[in-house]
Length: 253
Image (cartoon, rainbow, N blue to C red; front, side, top):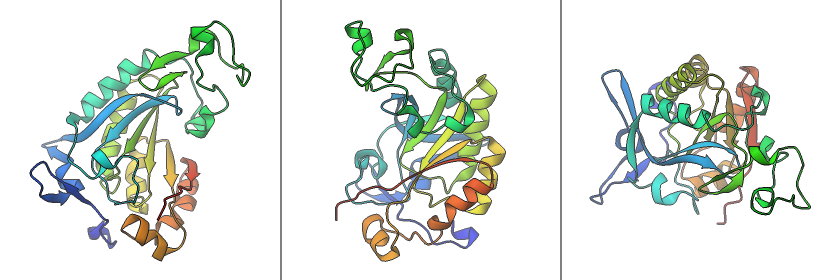
């Protein structure tokens, strides 16, 4: 980010020995031509109904962070982008809903299933069931019942400022799979025009963009850094042909 003329984020991660290092140096590495990422977990998530890769390390330090135990701490295991592609192939084998690209978002999971599991457990549909899925399309994951959609998402911590890693991962996932979309859940800090070009070249399809506050002073107090260019990101994303979903979080403080 600094080399592109932007301020560095609030990136420090607590290491196992109590010291602190920047997320891009402590939870991301490259050995020769191979990228590696520290992740906490990877599985079919609810209520998103897609394969989520939970990343350690982040360029924000948000108050009340949902993923604080691994976003700001060295916590997890190392995987290469090739290994992530292998995980995606394995997941593709259990996909039950094949979404078009324009539905490669979390939001579009909400009209498919209410995740009660009644159709599987009791053989009857709940009162709020959208009635769009067959019983056979509802499967159990570590987070409950629902469909499995053809989307791989990067979530948890965020180092999208290191766009080359995500582009490489997306390219490998798409080369290995037959019909998977790649989504990045992000605070938008790393989505500079140059980085968006890199992500597009790798085949990234969509973004879940968390805009945590509009006022810069409030944003800095809540997240530890600026939102100066984040507010310009939605227009860039749409103009470049990505699918965009925008969320505004409530952060007590």
